[in-house]
Image (cartoon, rainbow, N blue to C red; front, side):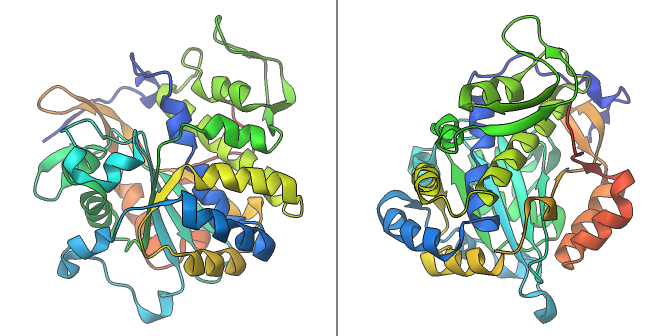
Length: 353
């Protein structure tokens, strides 16, 4: 049992954080950009030569999961694609479970990416890493512990059991080149609605800014002065992701820029074996009409923070809002559900403070 804290979510501000946490959390956008706005056939052909030499493979984590426990997919929904994307400390340890040490590979970012079967929209749902959930075979724990306990297979199993959504693909990054990924695009445009400052390292005036990698990292990593603490940082991270997607989408024909960006991504991502070049190409082409405005970023609905029985600070998911959202994703009806219920969901707004 948990003991939920009724205090507002904005009080949940983490006291310690590694300097590279946001860098880790944000490099997942490389996977998202490749799948959602991958640059068309020319980029895909270029990417094939890079993929074979640079991108790591994690084997088939789905083979380790009992099929009888997995969510089913109705035939009419088979065209939808659900991908679980993680930001972790190391792709290498993800691919070699013998290197794991308990607690050493907990993930900083957990994102469920839903690509609609009609290829007209996509939803990206961030699940807070401190969400207190059942982990198969391990009782209740923070959701990011699943990766430490059992790697990709247990993480997929945990998310599938939590959400009822069947996952087709899995990707993980080690994030060291994320600032370079942003710089490869010549910076990204982010609108800052009001002057912001943490009194130390972060200071931006209101207006549109083209931020390089280090500047964007500082913006997304700001710790002080955010009304809703960690949840505010998640929104800034998503805003940065959206800005990168927009830059990629608007520069598909820029071969030099796309080559640099794709090279950086290919060196930063590891995927399951089934996410082959042919499958990536198919996703590229089928999703080529999806624009930035067709991608909705959300944070999994939560009711606030609390304490576990052993004293851990946790995020308490709001199952009354969480479960219907996940049911809509499982039924490939997410776009309509989000449109009808946006006021009750944690949808990323047009501008982010």
